[in-house]
Image (cartoon, rainbow, N blue to C red; front, side, top):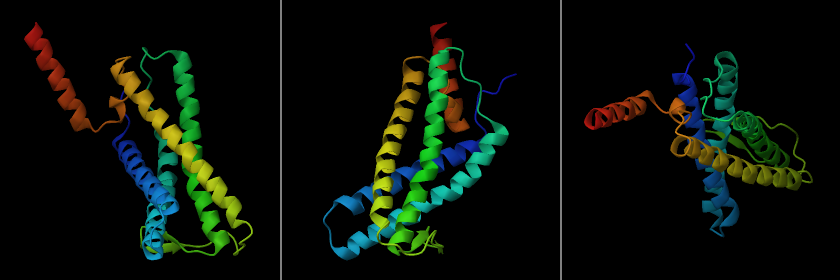
Length: 195
């Protein structure tokens, strides 16, 4: 029998990373665009780094887990072209999830700034301080930040499209089991009332 759900570990890693990426993106956007007092801006940058670096550790767990356990079988109702597009989209998303914090790490290293992890410890610099390279890594980091924002929005929109338009179970395959049971119970009650 084919598996229709992601594993519990995969779901935890997915949703934890999703929250971390969104929070890091908001903190990064705030710290880079608002004209605020230097201390507040410095605090928001440290918060951004503290959250963003967590994604590297989550990704280090998520990629091997995904390779070992795979993904559930796609619903037959999803056209093969869309399934291929989803695989490509997921690949780009994984690449961006890796490249984005790495580019920030390189940027901080080149600029000579510390890289905190959840406010617990600091990552070692990836290179010696080289201020001339910092603006290049900054541009790469910003481009990747907007790229991942587009990819995440596309990911969410396609999940909603599969659920509401195609009526496939691809969105439910990543939801916590409690929510799925409630949804299934609700459907059963509706069927009983109708029949």
